[in-house]
Amino acid sequence: MGSLVVSKSRTCIQHLCTPWVANPLYFRPALACLPQQNIMHAVRLIINPHTQYYSTKGDKQGTEKGFTPRTRRAFPNSVFTAGTAKRTAEYLKKRAGVDTEELSPLRARGSVKVALPDHPLTPSEWAKFKESSSKPERFEMQIMEGLLATNADVNIAKSLLAYVVQDKGTLSYELLLRYLTLCVSGGHHSEVFDTYDIMRTCFKTLDTGASSLFIKGFSQTERWREALVVLEGMKKALRPSPRNYSDAITGAALHGDTETSWRLYDELLELGLVPNQDTWQCLFQSGITQQGHEDKLFSVLSYMRDNQIYPEEPLIKTIKAWFESLPDQKWNGKFSYVVPSGECKNCKASLESIQLTEEEYAELKDKVMKKVIEGSDVFKKTTTEELNIFKSFVKQRPPFDIVIDGLNVANTTPKATHSETLLAVVLELEQQGLNILVLGRKHMLQPSRNWDRQNMNKIKQKAHCFFTENISEDDPFLLYAALHSGVHCNFLSRDLMRDHKACLPDSATRRLFFKWQRGHQLVISHYVPGKRVRFQRISAYDTIVQTSGSSWHIPYDENRGDRATYEVPQKWLCLTQEH
Ligand SMILES: [Zn+2]
Image 1 (cartoon, rainbow, N blue to C red):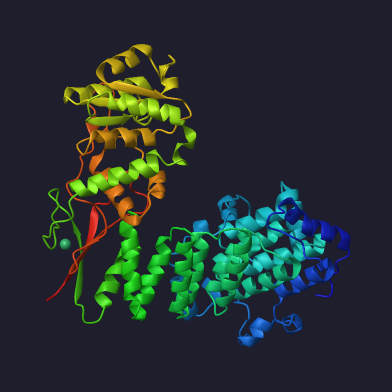
Image 2: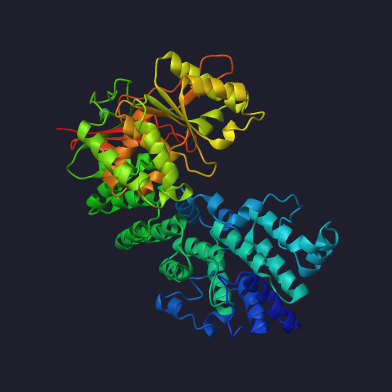
């Protein structure tokens, strides 16, 4: 260690501080930053965590929780190659369900094509290696990114850091952050702790990237409570992400503190964040091992119902296992599907109808008119004047059977121009004898390659048309026209109108809105120019989490990302109680 003399202390300060200064929102260099000691300290910690620096650091929290250097020893090499089988199994279990793609934005750049050493190198070996590099100025970063992308032995990364410090007298923040990413994704807990000590010594606050990595890193270890401290620190500057909460919740649950998991979960909801699948997975999992949170878990299912969220495959399996684990309730889960008439193939029960009752429809219309149409914030992209013109336009015409989101529908296929596609759709619906409203933008009336004047004239002959200012938002017009026309009126759009659910005052109204949407929204399922336009059929039953008390039906996604936003899952979990 003695050979690692750092002489350029002034450059050090500058170097260490530059990235934070460039990003002043999150960073403030600590006043007491002593670069020389810090870098020496840093490298010693990184290279040999057994040095006296642990005790001289006065790691109070660590001592309180009984973390002696002995229990905090580094994993020897990679966790995969050198850990015990048990540790590897535990690590894999913790990593299961963790989306490493989201671990850090830095990882996305990890596709570096550079030769990597397969064992730690000495500083002189690194120096020689660097000489052969085509981009010596990016050498360290490229190697570190390469190590990260291949999940390489952490000791190679350590030897690289040692070389960089010897060569430059400092470590750049970027390099340290990538090293941290490698440690967290590889489950090298001791190295994560060391990097934490370094960063806490050098910097008063941590940025989002480092904070997120520490939350994840700590959550996997006995020091999981420190993830909560990092989360608290993060909250002072900005809103943590659902992923940050997920990691912290997982940390608490994995260590048996379910109360803390639920407290964090409530906090997440209070912040208006949408929990992710991993969070629920972890909570249902903890419900299997620890009884007593049944009400909370049933409220998670209600949340999914209210917000039209569907569990993905790993989660649905855990939900099934949780139900079946409930003592004395005799739940029996089967994966099933629903026939077009709305009957569950497994238990033969009828699912909730997609049709709204008259009362429900009246309530929805009232709320949407008040909140979405009249609501001030939604119409900031249009004017009251334009809205009033539109309202009298609608009132002067007989109720429409179908309202078309013209711009959205015109974009269906690249094989035809926009106006050709829109005309084909209008002609198809006109043949069905429907009274049609096409909503469009003024720019569609300017003849261009996509917007042929003759096609537009034909559309205007076959349908009522209203063209808004080019900057106006279409959805409120569409909702107004459809709801004003009555319960029989459908609309055609590929858009899911997600923004509007946020404007609706309560979960009951949001649920009605989803239901109305699924029961009234048509989507083009197939269109080849010159052939008939085909529409996706509106389902008879409602695809939503539902219960009758003695049964539950939960639609779920079979493959993540396989479903378009306007589609609903086809697979169901059917849960029934034995009598
Ligand atoms: Zn069933």
